Each structure stands twice: as C-alpha cells, then as structure tokens.
Image 1 (tube, rainbow, N blue to C red):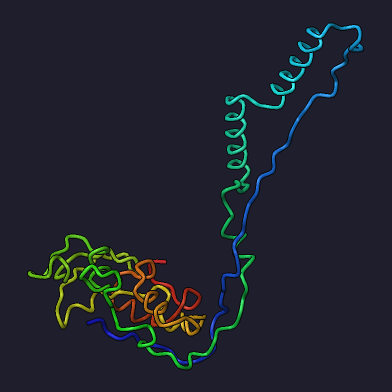
Image 2: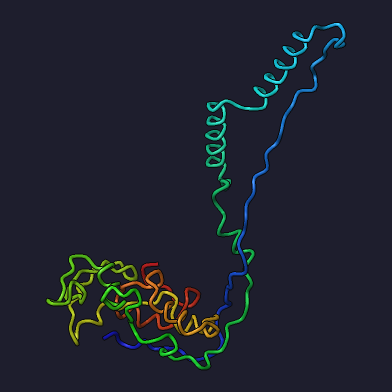
Length: 240
C-alpha cells in the first residue's frame, strides 16, 4: 500500500499557468510571372508563330519561378547551417516559448474541499486490463520484473528501478515494510491540480486524471514524500 503523502495546507503559492488556446502557423506562397516579353503586333505574325511564342514565354516563366529540387534542397541546407552557426532559432524551434506567451496567468485557488477521495479510489483499474494502475506503472518503469503467482503477470513482486529523482538504482521488493521504497508519484500532484482547476472537473475526469500514466512515475519513496504536493516552482528532485 502506498504511504500517504504529507500535504501542506495554505492558499498561497506560485502563479498558475492555464492553457488559453492553440497557435496556428500558416505559410503563404507567391506566384511569379514575366513582364519583359516584347512581341510584334499580332497582325504581322502567323497563328503558328504566335502560339509558339506564347508557349515558350509561359514555359520560361514557369522555369524561372520554380526552383529545381536540387536548388531547393541546397537552399534549405544552407538556411539550417546558417541558423545553427548564428544561434538563430529554426522554424521548428521556439514553439513552446510562443505558446507560453499566449497562456493566462492566474492566482492559485484555495485548497478548500480537497481530499484524495475527490479523485476516486486509489489505483483503480481504469483501462480494465485486470491490473490496478500502481502495478501497471511498476511493470512499465521497473526492469527485471517478477510477478506473484496466479495474478496473470499483474501483481509485481520484485524489480529494479532506475530512479529519475535521485539517479540511483533501487531494488523493489513487495512487502509491508519494503513496498514504500518505490512509490508512484503524481508528477502534477492531485492537491496541486485541485488548486489549479481540477475542482471544477467532474468526478469521471478527475478519476481519469488520477490514473493517467502520462502523469505517473515510479520513484524513490523518500523523494516522493519530500515533494508532497509541491509543483516544479517549489520543489525539484536532487537529480534536477
């Protein structure tokens, strides 16, 4: 059973970033032509000559406006090399920074009304694979995993964790006095989420959030206890 985390009371805290929208990027193309073609009056030319002249002019304009694949590739390579040398951002970089500038910044809400039960029962089997979320994450994050007999490779008995918070290796052994050496951390703590908008979510969504593998990590137990319900502005692991 996972030990309860110590939670700090209080309404103050770091500013909260709330996603306000998405950024769309567009590309505009240009159409090129040629204005310097001088022709004789049409009356002095035969229809064949006129048609030939028009066709040649069009083909010439198209060739001028459309770079060859080799030229295009060379230009792209040159642009990337220039950006790398000068330290300038390429078009694909800086997207996170641009998105950050669009977010609303608001104060942390009160912790009033929070309890772990608001996020459903601990470690539910939300994906209905026969294993609870804790064992799913242990299976995902540990190496050399062994399972309890008769559980269809569900209940993890032993394994080795390369802990992301302390950069150490931890031997996990399931047991009343040993299981807490490895705990499953909500990277965004449930209490923290409650104060930053989760109190406005419905029960089903909060339950899904509490069991979302994208927000869960198997980590060193003492480090997880030290974190409590802190966010990245108030707590970072030793392995920053």
